[in-house]
Length: 202
Image 1 (cartoon, rainbow, N blue to C red):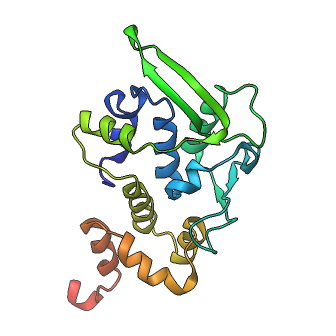
Image 2 (cartoon, rainbow, N blue to C red; image 1 turned 90 degrees about the vertical axis):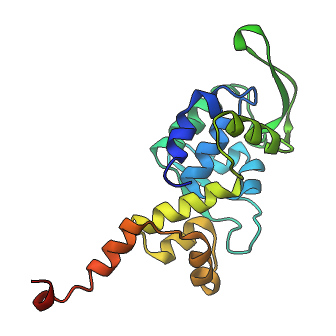
């Protein structure tokens, strides 16, 4: 997944052309933060600080995940900013991804109805499955969290920092990194390269 997620994210066939207009923003946010599904689904506008480029997670799956501050990189900030422009009358307590129904008419113009910003979107499972099936991929939403962690590991980010971003406790950090950190062969070679014995390698 980590090798192709960026290409899929930018593909018109996968996310941008979905009648579920929120899908592209949701996927980018997941890939760029490693947040869990409900951390994103239940996000409210008051939790996002556009000036500081951060968001504060609400009630999460774990104690360590609840209330954590997650920095937004340029990709995440731009995408969520573009999404916010669709809601000029939004209130702080409104959900970032509100309950709504969307259909594509002729000309692929999306029509939104039954929009309720006081309720969160119920599920994007079907929209995700259909969009990625058209692109020729099989993916679960939780795979984006795997991808985010794997990329951080391969970039050499210290494990305590990864734990802080994704909401792991110190006690489960090593266990989780085995579960999520699927390092590439290239990254593993860099690790063993640090163990070279100069007299032998010469």
